Amino acid sequence: MKRWLLACVSMLCMVALLVGCGNDTAKQGKHLNVGLYWFGETLDPTHEWDAWTLTRIGAGETLATVTPDMKFTGQLADSWENIDPTTWKFHIRENVKFHNGTAMTPQKVKESIEYTMKQSPRSAKAVKIESITVDGQNLIIKTTEPNGSLLSSLTEPAFVIMDTADLKDVASKPVLTGPYKITSFTKGESIELTAFADYWGGKPGLDSVTVKDIEDNNKRAMALQSKDVDVIQKVDSANRSLFKEGFNMQDVSGVRVMMLKVNHTEASPLHDKNVRSAVAHIINYDTMAKVIGGGALAGGAPFPPSANLGYDGLSNKEVTDLAKANELLTQA
Image (tube, rainbow, N blue to C red; front, side, top):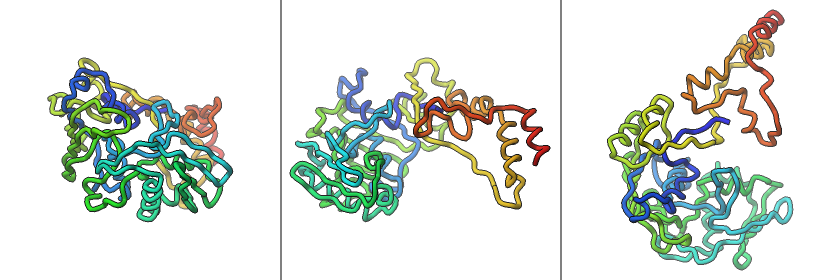
């Protein structure tokens, strides 16, 4: 499985770092400057993919989330049960407050999920929810068809729980539940956050955080070298060697897939299966991964086997074999 290279922080452990990191900066309750490789156009959770920024910076939370070792764990729901093929029950965590001080109740969670589905067709399509009802501290979700991936879909940042009764500044300061509260947002530049004193998970590890939008790989690396930021996300292969000494650099397994699609139409030589297979046997996947990924990727095709659902010892059948490629081309 290919690995993402990040300096100090990955998408999955960003919140853990900001909340409970054990370094001196966190213990002293100081300010942290973070450089991210991308901001959304807004901070509205329902606008395109913008919600991903909210979970990365520790502002937004979903019912459940995924740990670095790819296990589901409760966040705003502390337990759940798949009652039957189309019915799920989520027990909503008690004593949670939104950043405006309003209590997060099961009814509020229901309204948030329904609002997201209404505003984001992509999100509605993923969850296939027919109805949501409140039963005490539980949320009962009925799906239109058996949906074994519902829990996974609800961990998508688009489903961060927000107070939909307070949407006046949703594009810049959505009212969320995370350990850090957004105080200002400047598109394409920065997000300012302060620790949320009433956070359900305990006192955050920092007093305040500045998150900077540094999309250029080289500028982001330079910002860390010059100490303009304390931590950056996503170091590309060209800059990897800069941080081998004097920096805390982590390689983290990820599930993102990068791929090239080829033209299979009748007018293309690749319409012939033998030609496609020959090309697959010509490619040296390990060398390609080394050159493109700078040692951060593992070679494999069409996808690394361990990234496939249900993986159980599968291997890539189309290994580099020039003789086999020539044989296939003669059959084309």
